[in-house]
Length: 359
Image (cartoon, rainbow, N blue to C red; front, side, top):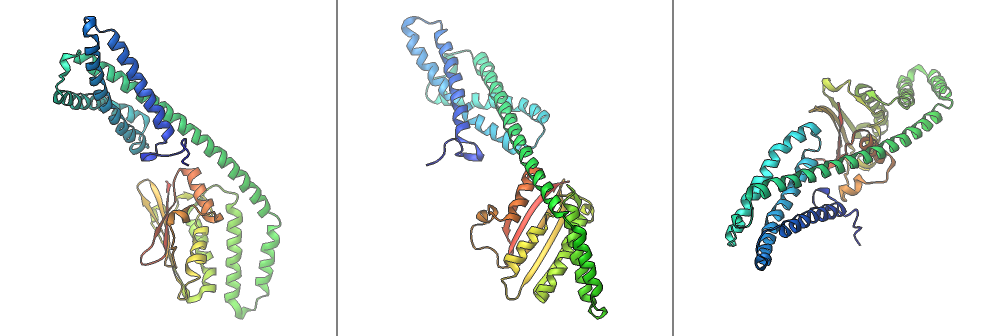
């Protein structure tokens, strides 16, 4: 059975929130209508007749405003959610005018078609501008207050999650620091014992030490230059080429203007590892991995694509996988930047992982 509080309507609106606003809107209208009917100065014998006319007119006019407000909510809190609060306040001025004029024109035309001109029931200037305007302002005030509360709640949750991630990262960094010099000294000793005729082996050991050194150093930093991260990935892929040989082709394209952009460390390695493990490795002829980093507006857009076997199932399931690497990246992007990771099918085969980071 659908869980009512978390069930969604259009545009991600929760059923619970929509019902709460609907009850508020029509309760306001009922109170207003009751005051209007009881304050009418007409002969008692005609009271029910005029009350019925007012009821029909109110239901038509405010029904139109009700559906218009849904569109206004979508515009301000979905389409323009990244626009500053000050700009939104200024946009409400022309929107209020449109709200009043459009509702009045459509409503008056409808009433005319059913044989009930509006002038026969009430003063147009007062009740068709003043009261709807007050209702608009009240609703917008409630919407902005609720939106601010929701965003503050999400921010607190993000901060809590980030504190937990920072704690785990600190613990992992402490674990990683246990005898690191022993590891590097051992690798240096092995490298020194390699015969000069095996220079390739010496280079591989040095590259392996570099990858360990970068992983250790990055565990102590929140952000690193993109160029450093890509240099680490390049070294990592050089090591993997020794295993895949001619089955692996690598391409890295970077715009010069984003080379020094700051990104969280070890953000690309799990994606590249997944491409190798699940995409390239099962293929007899291997495949290629391409990393593209470019500027996109005010963001750094990163794409990691491969020509491996791809994924036959629903990509949404792959996005929500419980795998540690992809889940960790998705969580870090969401908590740090509020950005989502996109997974698409590559052409002619394989997968593309795309995400962006504010610059």
